[in-house]
Structures are given as C-alpha cells and as structure tokens.
Length: 174
Image (tube, rainbow, N blue to C red; front, top):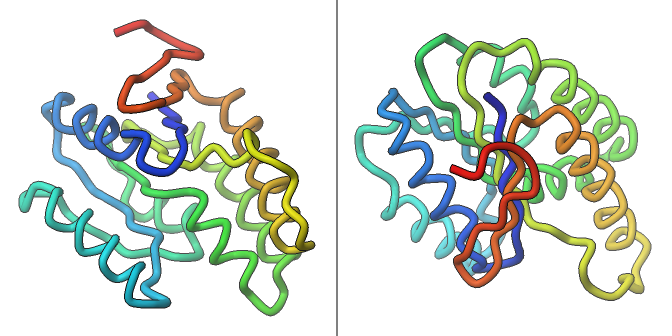
C-alpha cells in the first residue's frame, strides 16, 4: 500500500501520517529527509523528533531516497517518509541539480511499486499559491508538482490535509 499525504505548512499532514503509521500495528521506520541548515529548521526537526514514538526506527536520508527504501524494505512494516518537498529541495541544491533531481525522482517512481512495506509519503502541496518570481523557486514548484502527479498515479491512496482535516482524493474513505 502506497499512501501520499499532501497539505500546506502546518496543515496536519505529518500528524495524520504518524497516526496512520501507528494505527497499522506494524513496526515503523521513519525516513527523515530534512537537513538543519539554520536554527529555525533545527527547531522544526527537534519538534518532529519529540512527537515520534521512541520505538520507531529513524533513518536520515536527504538525497538517495529510493536506495534507502530498497535497503529498508521488508514485509510487515510501515515506512513513513517525511517529507518529499524537503527531499526535492535537497536535490535541487546539488551542484548537478537537474541531473540529480531527474535521476533520483525516476528511481523513486520505479522502486515504489516493487516494495513489500506499506509506504506513507508526506509532502507539501506547492501549487496552490502564486507563481514564484525566482527561477529556482519556480523550478522547485514545477518539479514538485510533476512528482506529486506521478506519485498520485501509482499511490493506492492520496489524502489532502487542510486545517487538520483530511480530504480523501483517491482510495478508501477509511
């Protein structure tokens, strides 16, 4: 089962993903993609760490998400990835940004359908605002939007969170 949970900043998407993982009654591996580039991000990371159950295995992987998923994959577990937009930012900050981003996104799209684990992917919906003025910001929004569309096609369930309320876009209503 592949679930994609989208939403804006502070929409409740991470909380929903964590609750969904807990309710599965399986072992949980949490893949964190964030990097603490500044104090504010370090605080956000600490907040997320404090909310996670101590029994969850945590793996930090800012770039090679597909390879990490393959390594961790096994039946009878949940792998929660939080979040894809930070992962995309990390890819776009690489020296060979376009090649790295295209290759890693394709690897992710290729590997997801082959996994035995239940997968929960968390990402920020970036396409609801104005078109950004800067080139890298536009590229980020465009590439993230493309990735979300492709993930939505292969996901079994897609949920959009607004103000803490989940709206089911695809899949079971429960």
